[in-house]
Length: 55
Image (cartoon, rainbow, N blue to C red; front, side):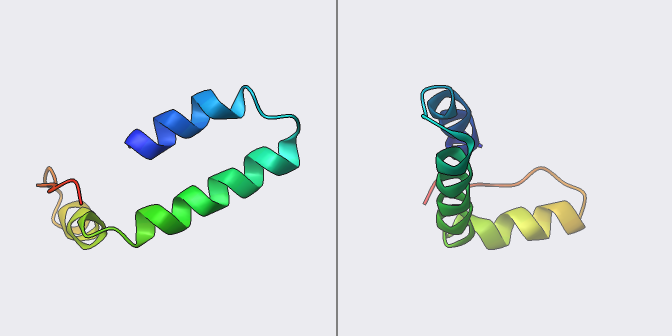
């Protein structure tokens, strides 16, 4: 969530849409590789709030 919020604000300063899209793609890859990603998926499937470790 933090990366998404930061990305939204940063996108306002980017010179064009292509740059913003490339930036977003990189953020998605980074988020998918965090230790919290499996917990996010489990919590979603179990319909509960996630217990993030912020790693």
